[in-house]
Structures are given as structure tokens and as C-alpha cells.
Amino acid sequence: MRHLLSAADLDKDQAIKLLDLAEDMSDVNDREIKKLPTLRGKTVVNLFFEDSTRTRISFELAAKRLSADVINFAAKGSSVSKGESLKDTAQTLEAMGADVIVLRHSSSGSAHRLAHTDWVGSAIVNAGDGSHEHPTQALLDAMTIRQGAIKHPRGKDLTGIKVLIVGDLSHSRVARSNLILLTTLGAEVHVCGPATLAPASLVSSGRVHFLLDDAIKLVNPDVVMMLRVQQERMSDSFFPTEREYARIWGLNKSRLARIGENTQILHPGPMNRGLEIDAASADSKNSMVLNQVRNGVAVRMAVLLTLLSGEAS
Ligand code: CP
Image 1 (cartoon, helix red, strand yellow):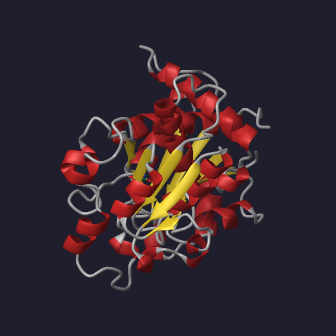
Image 2: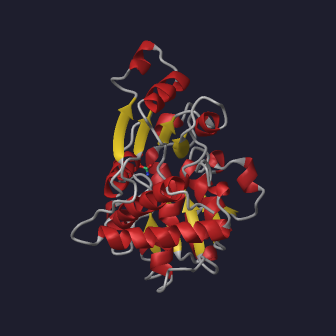
């Protein structure tokens, strides 16, 4: 693996190997001294053109726990405001010694562009490109699902696990990467959301539901993954009102009572409480939101190790 741009870059064996390595990294994160010397002398650049809390901080922590040097770049306050391009910005940071560039950008395809031109020679990790993909989010979600659904996670895929992804499907890079990776890992993946927010490619797949109550009843999911309504990416009105959205597609106390006792609730964050998920669901015992955050550090350690240690298969 030279770069990680898409969940489709991983076949089942590679995905399982990364998830197993992430479990090892999770063990390191549980120690009193949460540090390995493995990436001493390497430099990780977090190149973030879009806001982030979880992804940027967890990549920073992951790199530091592996003893790499870290440069955090945020477009706000940088020379991007003077018109500097992605190419010039990336080349400038690579000239300072970057070995891996972790890129978040609002343009779909930006990570592929950086990886497949001769602009830079660093390994590229896609940390979210527009509405396209977010592969490390899918890996941390798969790790969380595997921990919850199977008692002995190492070496196992997700065969037999039913996942229901709910909400703003059109704008969600999280949904796209999860659909690819969870299917690779053998899970049965269903989606649910307003017809106005369901891409035609998904509708034709046959596992699309338009009403959450029906979907819960029909699928009986092991995992319900709620998506953030991405109002900042909406140039149009896709549902009548927020109240109407919450009523039909939101996870709430009444729906929580109808899902299985052991059904995991996932949300990539940040949550719009009261819109796609209410407080009772977000803070319930079924909620895996903080497990996802914890697993994010371990998964990103595994990705950096795999890309930089030269052990990639
Ligand atoms: N899940 C996720 O990508 O969160 P951030 O935008 O905070 O990084």
C-alpha cells in the first residue's frame, strides 16, 4: 500500500491485517506509557483545508505515539488566503521533509490528485475529500463494529453483521467509504434516508429504505450508523423542515426502544443533537460514539505504520 485514498484500496486480507494491527495499537494506547519508537525520524504533515476535530487530532496523536514529528497545517491563517494552490502548499511542506501527507479538502478527488501527479513523493492519506471518501473513518467504524459484534475480533471479518446507515447519504463520504469497506468485510449493508438525499447508484443497489421505522423493522440491524446532516454542503432544500427530518429519519427514544438490546449506535461526529440523533440515543449504553473516537487513534497509528514502515502488503 503506497497511499490510502479510498476504502476500495483495501482487499479483505489487507483490511483485516490493518484492523488487527489497530487492535495491537489499542493495547499500546491502554498502557501507562503510550509510546512506540517505530517512526522516529519520520515526519507526518496534517494538511487540513477543512475544519476537523476528531480526524486531525487523532492523526496528530497517532503520529506522536509512534514517535514521528508532526506538522499541523490549517488553511485558515496560512498563505492559502493569499491564493497559494494545493500543489504549491504540498510541495512547500514536502520540502520541509514530509514523509506522509494527511489531506482533508473540500474537493472530491483532491487526495487522488495529490497522489497521482508528480507534485510530491510522499505517501498520501485521504482524511476526507468533499462528499467522496473518508477511508480511515470507515476503518475505525469497522474496528468498533467488530469489537461489539464479535467477541474475539482479531483475524475476523464481519460476515453476518447487518448494518443500517441512516441519513444524508448524498453528501456523506463516511457512508461511501463504509459501504465499500463493510461490504469488503462481508457485512450486509442497508441504507435509509430521504429519497432526495439518496444517490441513484445506491437506489439501484436494492438495499435502500426510505422510512426509518420500516427499515428498523425489516432489517433488524446489529448496527445503526447515523449520519450527520451536512447543511454546509447543501445548496438546496432537501427536506421540509428540521422537525420533519427528525420525526421521520432521526434516532430517538422511541426508536431506541425498538432496536435490539445489543444493537450498536454509531455516529462519525460531530453530532447534530435533536436533528439526526436525540440526546437519549447519543448518550445511551448502545452508543459507540466515544469508542469510535478512541479507535480512531489506534486505526490511524496502524495506517501510518503500514505506510511508513514498508511492511505494507
Ligand atoms: N468524523 C470526522 O471526520 O470528524 P471531524 O470532522 O471532527 O474530523
